[in-house]
Image (tube, rainbow, N blue to C red):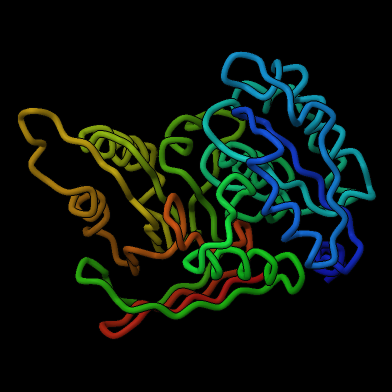
Length: 304
């Protein structure tokens, strides 16, 4: 209960925007900053937020400095990653996450941010928020659910969804801790100190812009590492903009994923609205979760 209460944001709480990966401009984040301020939060900028170093928002040392400052500051209640791209894995080992044990706070983002999600879960056993990022936030009506679900998680610590069932789904019910994130990053952190233990957990995966054979290779990596057999459930979010070779691989991304888990006895949900899609709804990774997949619908209750 103490951890839960420390996580819930109140009006006037401070959130810090950092850019641990690719570079951003003030114009990129204008809508998001206004949105957070309208919710009553104070927005703080990382020292090197507007920096550039090749494709990054500063050198590895500068990006790590901003992340560490946000982690260390007890007045910062949420760390919001401005965007993804690539860069988090270059700095994760430069960071000391132990201050989060004394002053828990949300780490928010998706895609490249997955390396921080998995590292914090493994090393600190604390929840984090898989959600939209400032670079993606606009006034498009299709993004309303992404924005509101993020704020709901930050302020109440509880999320509840009901969506239509999909043809590839496998039916059943499951309860467990929700873990996961971007499939490519889960593949990249395998067998490192940032890797996650999936036993008895509900795994969430999503990805963008991958070749179909690579999706197969990543799923096989997880399977051979024993990360799929002992799950309680699997949630597949957006698997978008997939590529194929001149000679087709022969299977869709959904078919590939299903082929590697259909032998197991747990529910599987496809097309969950989270990931590299417009309707990128928040999920509390490390949160307690109830998943129900039926022929009619999918319900998910997810909370700190």
